[in-house]
Image (cartoon, rainbow, N blue to C red; front, side, top):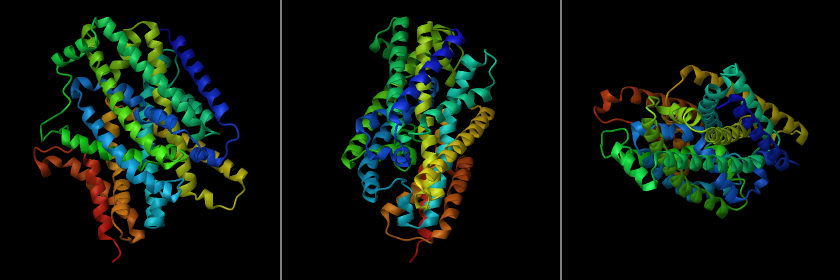
Length: 478
């Protein structure tokens, strides 16, 4: 496919995003940027959050992993659904009752200022790492597929994409993102369906025949019943539930959108509906992953992992399908990156710098918020370059592993606050939040020595959260 045509498609797509941003961002202020004036439609939020929850990593990495991991990812997705129900009926009522703009304000009222700042910093580090890992994957695909042949350096590609995101989130923030995410989720899901339909037609198979062919290749196993394996289904379901509770329920980016809905009941509907939709969408991604491996075998391709879908879509399919793939890919890129930049800006402004409490006029506050937004973009650039140097073959596994270390302390903090009535020695909380991930790291590194054949996988997040909880219990006030 001609790289100039693909590049022009990206430019047109971005122009459409910018037009939506201009329409929705009119008359915006800091309240619009942070929580959309609490006037967002719950159905739009639920649909748009599909794109944020999935990202380019799911679009490329989940289908690419089917060859090695079969349909085991569906185990984690079942856990996701459980997690969304917990968020809807335990966490959201708490956030709405306290009328929070930043959810980490709960930690301040419950345990103290050091706990509050610790929670905010953990989120900032966690979201920065996770969002930039997702961003890197898609930027790298665009670089290899299009811009490298045009002589454009990787650093320039990253700068341009970050510049695009800044342009359409700079004014409206959450108020704009609710609408742009809806547009992008639509494009991503259409790309998924169209690419799958083309491959079935090319292979001469209908839906059920495709499943049968995948089954014959051993791709369709959902439940792993090996109790010692990392992918054992009970461990995966539990891990999925806790990943959702942490990476959605106590994550400022995801909750920022939910809190922009006017009523608690509507926000709860948004969360539960999102959970059920995600189970269906992830199932489609896994189905497409099976098709990609069947298609790759027919074309005698040796490509695997994250590079399989881009290789097939751009070099072994008609030009029209290549264009659809690129549109779907960038549609998967922007929702995870724009929301993360907005949420990090919000958390830095409100939680770290205390912008709401400063005796400044609105104009000065907006100016400060925009400076922080640009600083977040610079941090994104640095992290993408770091991931370029790491260059892991399966980013979905890396992201979930990193989440186990970075989100664990948040899980422990919120669990202790919600399920106990104890106060803590607030000044000691940051030390607990540093110690728990360090101990978790050594448990993971030496797990064969400690547990023998029993392997720890994504449930490392639960262990990390439990260590934080125990640490907080030890420093409770009597």
